[in-house]
Every structure is written in structure tokens, then in C-alpha cells.
Length: 198
Image (cartoon, rainbow, N blue to C red; front, side):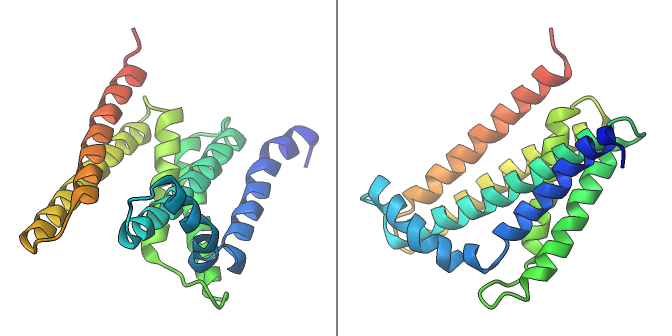
């Protein structure tokens, strides 16, 4: 590899190593919960265990989105001069997500999950959509992000209605629904601003 090639391809390869480290046994849900749940409880003293565990799970999924968004952005940078670089960036990130999830089955406290691969792929797609909003893939990424926000909002609202029908408090689900709707609206405005700058 020539130095310019190395400078382009080293970052995504190194980041894949970081992801592999974060996917090991030291960062399983039990381990991150042992230090993150007390922090969340300190920040939200009125939150019950169900809410704290839901926040912990949500933060872990957000980490998946972020890790693979960064990986796709690094692949996009590495492949920028090639045709259909944005497609290759998403495909390479998604393929690595499959490999990484399969490898997690080797750790005693981790298990592979198809849902995590989907979240990883969504993170990669959204990163490319942010970086290339005017491409076909970029437009598709924005649509997926908006519909995902709508899906989270509808599911949260449905969960809140079920909880209320059982006489349970559901303010956390109602807040999640409101945040998802606000996020979907914000994504729509941001997409329009990026696609059609004035």
C-alpha cells in the first residue's frame, strides 16, 4: 500500500478493531449495567428499575448506531474516489456487523442478535445519508430514519396505552413516544435543509 492508500484505509480497519474490542466480554450488558445503571439512577432518582434498564438498553443500541455510523463514514472516506462509494461503505459496514455479531457468540456473556445487525446497518445507512444526502442512498437513509422514528413513537404509544389499561404508570413510554415524534419531525426538517440548501 502506498502511504496515501494507507492513510485512507487504515482508519476504517483500525475502527473495526475498536468495534471488536467493544464487542468482547468486557462490554456485555451485565458489565456495562454494573457501572451505568448506578449513574443513571443518580441522574434520575425517581426512575424505577424498569425505566433504568430500558435506558441502559437504549444507550447500548445507540452505541451500535454510533459505532457503525462512524465505520461507514470511514469507509466512505476511504472509497470516495470509487463509483458508488456510498453503497460500498454501507455494505462493508453491514458485512462487518454480521461477522462481529457472529463472533459475539464465542463470548460466554454475549450472544449474537439479528436485531443488532439491523441497528448497525441503520447506523451505517444514516451516516452515509448525512454525508451524501443528495444521492439515492442518502434519500433512502433519511426515509428509513423518519419511519424508524414513527415506528418507535407508535410502539411507545401502544405500550403506554396497554400499561394504562392495566392500571400501570406509563409516563416513560409517553415521553419516548413524544421524543420519537419530535425526532421524526426534526429529521424531516434537517433532511430538507441538507438536500435543498438556500
